[in-house]
Image (cartoon, one colour):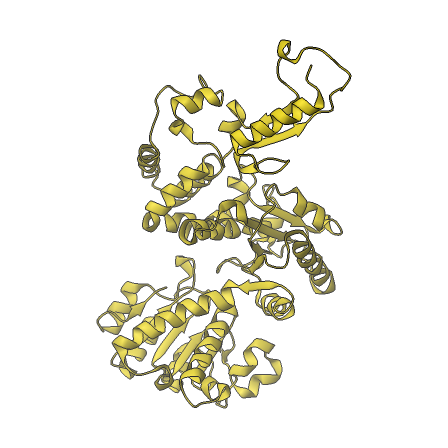
Length: 481
């Protein structure tokens, strides 16, 4: 039997051989090494005994094939199959990763229904992560609409029915007072990015509660495929505080809490515990992205935590950056500067006001106008009509900067006729609002109208490209981001 001293010497040799870092080993290689407490007084000749002075736990055999982070499918070489006890657990053929990609893509193309392709892609992500990302990276135009919008919207609506295995971290009201413990249950410790939703405003589909998990999962998949963020550094989170969706509450397959959505102080206290726990567990440098929160909570959370945490709201800030970039590019076609144009938004929520604010800041930056004067070039229409100063007392806080002096106007068409915008932007989340009359009016006012129908999924877009082309009778007037 080995003595503790000799065992530790061999332990160190093995560490050097395998490149193990630290006493706990490299989790990414699935290796854990721990010294045992051997009896120093045992004098049995060590050369006569099997060398097992510590417990070694290596992901191998059946376990390795069930680990999405380490599984390579048929791409395991002959040597790897022997080294990891895989012989006989796989068919004898050895495929390159490229051949596996080709085979999987061929299989995906057999599905005619996008939701079926989504399910197949999620299954692949949970069985062979490397192949999933290779497939997505090299076929992004084909698979982006499957992994994210528009297909992810339908997937979230039917999440309970298509649910197969857990993805991401679920934190519900049942975990109040224990959120830090829940975070510690997540296997990866070096988290850099968290995308979190409470499911109240999923795309343009409304309150989907716990079934909104498809959004954080899909968004982080894109951050890896398109942004190069390590999958192990990403954490999708769904905060389940109930739902207002009666259909889900009555659905026997609904996977979330079957109770009315928590609001007010109960909601705020729960989110405060979550934010505190995240900072304590992952440090102050972890990025927390708020995703698809309802308007009132989205603005409040961003305002409250922007000075104490590294936070970002994609719906308010991310969309605005992309749209501003599109506008600046479009100016090359329609002429003028941002300050020369008049903007009319259909939709005064997170996206609409976020875009409007960034446009006004860009105008302020490039001209001698104040921010307040820059805002005068931007008008918003909400469900009650044009946002004007006479409505100021009843407006939500985020709409008030856009309440300008004008007589009340009830609808979008009337607003287009009254304001005469050169740029029309849709962020309403309500489909078919850019009617033939609206687009014809825009074309009659402008030689080159700029129309941006931004609502998603596609079913909720204000109009289609074909409708804009046809109704405006202007060559290429439509920009859909």
